[in-house]
Image 1 (cartoon, helix red, strand yellow):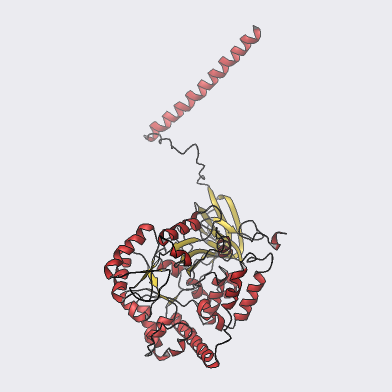
Image 2: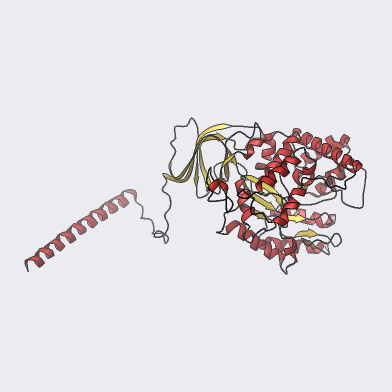
Length: 507
């Protein structure tokens, strides 16, 4: 009985203490509410499950580094104290001489003396899945700092399915949101707009009349495509309607064309490959398309200043796809092949590439044995003219895009750095080549408010390099960190994220 009484007394004491604490808290809360004359905020329905960061704790902080934000048209390298990232977005950039302190963070990267740039944008690819989850493709683009892709008609033979556009959007969902691998962000166009007549291609939708243009574009937009692609065979009156509708919806329209001047007059702002510019700079007219590099020697370079001014006046982006069209003519071709061969070796980044693709990849940088000496001489002459034209265009203020036309016959991600190499070989400064891989493609896609530069409010698509690419474009490969939407995708000596299944670096 004595033990029970003692226990009961303790219970009474504890209850009394708890009531006093509750009463005190209630009094304090009431006093505080009366002082501020505000009601307490309603309880959140997610309060029990969500664990948001406190204002004093960031998701990611990059300490130090030299910032190349790609905002300016001229090279700027500015030391910073740090970059703050929350919920995948850059929320603050703290200057090196600022008194502001860096917040605590869940993750911290010490950039040291490294160079901080936006992630690269490859604005012309044609993905063909190598494996069901696209493991090689997604892994290697990120490994080489490419965080955004613009994909033109990726499905190839898959476009023979009953609803190819729906398949494309399923494919976009896989790439952007699959838990298997956090690959680059993908922007996609649907099946191209083709005309009533022309080459039969699996990836073109042949419109029979101009009245079919708007309904087809409506269908694409309802599916959720990010831009509209057209084929060169599309009649001018069809193209005009597509361009006007794209401008009205603020949706980019791009694709192939026979004559650059003709489509620019209709309102097109993006020129794929060089052959349509060649066509505009010669009096020659052939029954077939002016494919580069076979006919670029026909360019009349006396017309270059006028053509360049026309491109600039109409704010046109030019995508020459240097590696795709001229890689085999480059003085780097042999070294590209040697690099590919080394990367196919056991334990290297592309070691799981299917054997069937390797001959096609090698062929991209090899001249055909049956090319005659005269034809080869013409091709080399045309290549030199293209290089001169691009140099003159950029010196005058034109915008040249770095994009690879990557398919299963290219090395995903790595080819982007080769594209930058070849643009610089043509006489373009490293900084303007980088603009063509960051800010300018974002502008064309109408995504300049989200990607392309490093600024507060932009997505945290960031790469950190060990050396300055503005001084030497080959330094663009000196990648230490790759961050996509605030998530670290590549880090030094980390083979757990995007290295191949068996990697010598992990042994």
